[in-house]
Image (cartoon, rainbow, N blue to C red; front, side, top):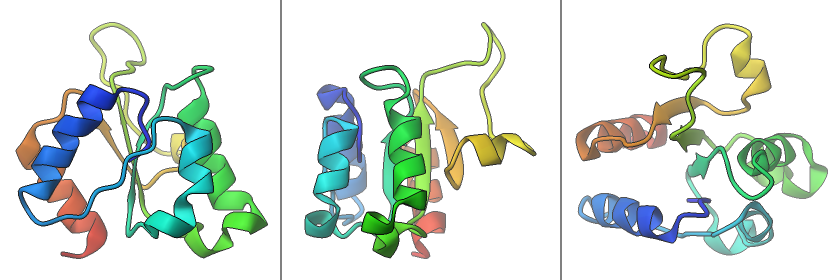
Amino acid sequence: MVDDDGDYAAGIRLVLGSRGYAFFHAADPETGLTRLEEAAPDMIILDVVMGNRTGGFLFAKELRSAAAHARFARTPILLLTGMRRQPGEPFAIEGDEAVFLPGDEFLEKPVSPELLLRTVSRMTGG
């Protein structure tokens, strides 16, 4: 998981750990990218808004396109954020937006443990 909110990441760790998933947390996109080899993730849970406010987008685009990360270019990315398109309207990946948001799935914070576990299970094949 790449998320600048350590408390939120700790909660996600508890939920995923309760089902036996290994968990690695990076507090910023730069650390996440530099520690890919060490973590060797089966999937990435990525906060969209970090640091300069586009940190998650930049992380995902770098992962998908840079030769240095080619081994992980097809690693599933779950975009997870509290960002909304406008007040009261959910933010979601639809149609052409999927090109702009380089991820495979999108969930809005706060996410229920059940929905998170179903999504992670589907994305990791188990």
